[in-house]
Image 1 (spheres, helix red, strand yellow):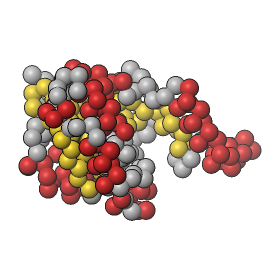
Image 2 (cartoon, helix red, strand yellow):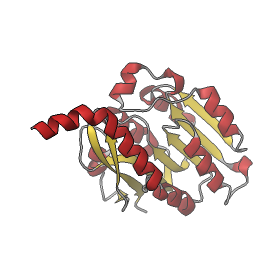
Image 3 (cartoon, one colour):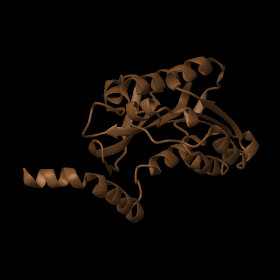
Image 4 (tube, one colour):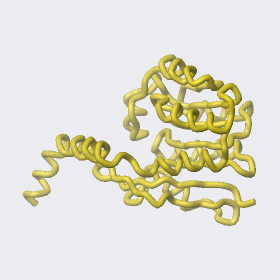
Length: 222
């Protein structure tokens, strides 16, 4: 009982410290699966739900340049950007992103064709999916609430062709009240091939404790 109270009192201090040390020493291991998926698909059309700072997008585009000239690569990114409210920050268990203009400028330096959509994907995905091309690689790492992830999958599924790979972040092994675990576990294995990353990353959040995180990799059965 006493030890538990001490841990609770120290949580605001030890959680950030644990995360920083872990990241410095090891880094998130699961992201190698995202880049492997791009290599497998040789993607030229990339969609990311949860662009955030654009740093990951730059890495994806850089790798895609191994297979295509920069001006033949299309990147489509969805995020709240500066539209994130305090309410959505809490509901989506999220991180605060930079502005859309800042991310647009950074991504345009890659030479790829960049299209960004600002706003809640509960609206921006249904509004824009009909005008988007089929994607080679889709990465879903936006809001972490169950309703948002279900929505993001619903519209991403419509943008899949036979060889599209959809990678989900936040398959939480130890929680089912958020993340993609419930959705992934419900997918029809007669229609989809579903694999979980071998790597498990562990992250301590000062508000709700330990997360054990894998990637889920989804493709159509041909």
